[in-house]
Image (tube, helix red, strand yellow):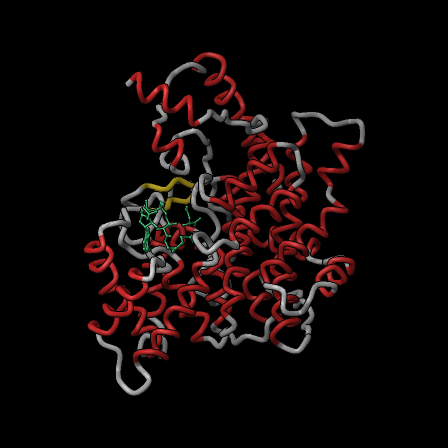
Length: 438
Ligand code: NMX
Ligand code: MLT
């Protein structure tokens, strides 16, 4: 049986002529134009990035390698005794576009076991930080500390650097990073919230299950981890974390530099931090409005307007690309509805009530182009239910999942020899001149 790396080598070799032909023969074909509001407004909708790993349709939502979320979950081999696939099978699928066989999945699980050992200098670097540092700082530092042993950096410095084979050492770093990031995340969780009670890796468990084991979670949480990491993995390449990772790596900075930077973008409240903001908002709502009474749609409406009138955003709602409810939201909601206990949980019911109320309020408010919930509006309540209540850790969970998409993407970036990213800036005076000229 060919290894994942061998399968990928063939895929990259097969793909290269397509990219070369597009550039050589059709390089000047126009696929978009840029307007002044796009230039000032965050390059929204400007089509200038290429990835085949996922595609985000504004109406339909994400497709991983051409498959919707339900199709992805359906197609991939499941973890033993579980309804969900292992993260390792999803990694194989993201990288190659092929649904792996059980034997191919087992090989990746075994390979990641050999990659999981985190050097002690990473623990030293994290421990050196103030204990009340945000866990995203700890994660970003932990990933950056791994840079010392980057195989890509070593290859670059070896004097034998070769553009055709450079992707191989990116693949090595990417695989190491994906295998190690849940171990680092578990270490941070235990350090901050379990009085530094560290649990050893279980060599018999797949990535998601082992993460659950390492943070002292229950059997059921193994599927929560698998589902969470897969759902948060990739959202095409224009989002802040994926784009930052791609941009930094385009300077041939190695995967550790690149993903540490990507994590720093994920830590922003308009991006991945929104999941902790959602929990914060919801609990504050309960505290302020529902100490003695049951929540009602009227109370939720009032709280939403209070937030909007204070000039704040409603966390977990809106999106730069999506124009409907995020299918990642629906997938997690379905998990809640199918989980006895969670289905009737007080906080889940409140989140469901916000879902019924917020789109109408945001539509009436009239600013947000998309009044529907995104992935972050539903993820925290699941963690909360399973007792993972330290919500400043939620973006770390997002960061563990997002590593899969970012690492798959930069492996392909190098495979296809994408150039250093360097868009052109203009001055305000130039915009004014072009505006006057019509
Ligand atoms: N609540 C209130 N106002 C909003 C919201 C919201 N949820 N979403 C957008 N707006 C406002 C936005 O601030 C902007 O106002 P202004 O003109 O005063 O600057 C206006 O509506 C137009 O923004 P859009 O074009 O709809 O949104 P944009 O593409 O700029 O930003 C988000 C997308 C996701 C950053 C934005 O919807 C938002 O801030 N949402 C809340 C935070 C959040 O949930 N982020 C997580 C996104 C998913 N993720 O995980 O990364
Ligand atoms: C993501 O998953 O990255 C977010 O939904 C944000 C985005 O796609 O822009």
